[in-house]
Image (cartoon, rainbow, N blue to C red; front, side, top):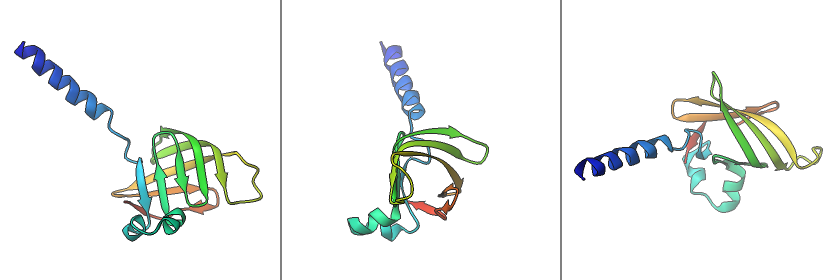
Length: 119
């Protein structure tokens, strides 16, 4: 019985660490003060990434798939909506995420978030 309890405990611990969120998942901003700002400021300054979608200032994508690359991650985002009236919605976008220590940077043609810290 004791062996069964130990095996179950070890399996639960190993399984829990295997299910840990990828390092890009979370809320990011150019400064931590933005993380606690009023909601209207957060909409303009905070980048939120979960395992299946993205929400950036002026861009939201309801679906996203992430693939590890040699420099970070490549995101194939779809069902995107944004503030650019010249783009027909919904649209798709390829986004690159690069980590530098404790910061992340999101880029795509014509856009660079600059270094962002976790909120």
